[in-house]
Amino acid sequence: MEKIKNFINGQYHDPISKEWLDNYCPATGAIYGSIPNSSKADVENAYIAAQSAFPNWSTTSLEERSRLLIKISELIEVNLERLSEAESKDNGKPVNLARRIDIPRAASNFRFFGNAITQFSSESHESIGHDAINYTLRQPLGVVGCISPWNLPLYLFTWKIVPALAAGNCVIAKPSEITPMTAYLLGDICNEAGLPPGVLNVVHGLGTTTGQAIIEHPDIKAISFTGGTKTGAHIAKVAAPMFKKLSLELGGKNPNIIFGDCDYETMLDTTLRSSFSNQGQICLCGSRIFVEASIYDRFKADFVTKVKHLRVGHPSQEDSDIGALVSEAHLEKVMGYIKMAAKENGKILCGGHRVTVKDYEKGYYLEPTVIEISSNDCTINQEEVFGPVVTIMPFNSEDEVVRMANSVKYGLSATLWTNDLKRTMRMSHQLEAGIVWVNTWMMRDLRTPFGGTKSSGVGREGGFEALRFFTEPKNVCIKY
Ligand code: NAD
Image: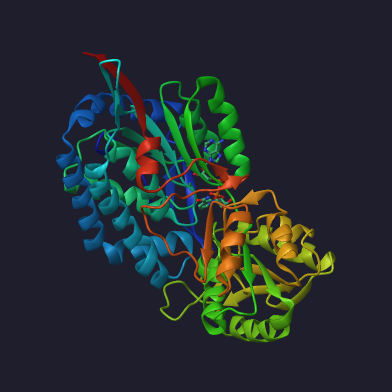
């Protein structure tokens, strides 16, 4: 049994309350470890460590901060195999996905922000005619809180903590209680790299216990949160009276819009990925597929054939396309949506059932599922399912598909398949989303702003946007 501990002031600690939670392996359904359910007292200890580390860290030179972050990036790469296996075991994702995407991206996050901080500059404005000059300081906020979800555990955990650290803040971070393992392993890596104690503190536990203690802490200056829309709304409510700075990256219900003039084979392969990568548990997955009527029947036949060929299997097997969903409760929730879609006249074209994988009968496996629907208003097209389930429906005109794409409360990403430049330009303006991909999906350049509109969030991460979030601009006006 693996016992995870809190990482506070550079050392591993049991929770003060001695309260532990079970950690499940989604592939087998078995408990394989325990994690602390940290209380306010643990968060307070983390705060004291972070607050004590802040004066030195915030005045450490940019070159030295950069060097340390890049060193951590290198050590993540050295530990690629170990971290990939840990991520796969904890989350249920295929190990080959963790090895190709999750862990390399965590290393990239450290390298990218380690470099970006040395390029981050502030502005100056000369007030001509008034003999004055204004310049803007970009000061770190102090101690900040970072809270992340279970779907891309180390990838998103580091996407939050690294810009905070690069900008000179000290961090109290909480990974999801469902996938705590790689954030736990990161503590040793930070120590090996020489990150000073207290600069990064990782506390584990339930959102309602540990997460709540972080967001309620009066001296934690900002919360960077990625997770569900409901949790985001709760955090906003708790944080508002304390005027905490907030970055909220929330749920999505993204349209994948396919026109007849697209590059068909590329679209088909990418649509398979954008539908089912990570068991469909990516906030950016295109779960509502709208297909121009002229190619609808062809697409439906080809897509369903490809989906039927996807292999559901144990995540440690290299040929598994689809691993296990993250938890029993989540599996039941996703299956509930499939049943509801069928009740609302959705036609299940393939999938829809739990899969029994030999030797791992208690694992949380589900067939990749395609549902044909006739109205965008049905529940499955309005609510985030966050599983290997997509809907398809035809459309007849650009206006009609834009209306349907925008007729949801979410606005995270949209994907558009067309070779018509004018249409691309028009629709990129019209689609209500923080990110529009045209003829591709999930191509990420870490310099670009990332985030959602409407109920998909507030604020942007990525590049200098993240460094701006984690710093306070202060204007200094000097009359000479
Ligand atoms: P969740 O909201 O249940 O939990 C996210 C994190 O918040 C966890 O660490 C959890 O412990 C914590 N939390 C829960 N209640 C809390 C509280 N009261 N106070 C403080 N923290 C609390 O989300 P989840 O189920 O872990 O993740 C799935 C969701 O995340 C989906 O909606 C998905 O779309 C979203 N997501 C969004 C993005 C994005 O970039 N927009 C990326 C990945 C996932």
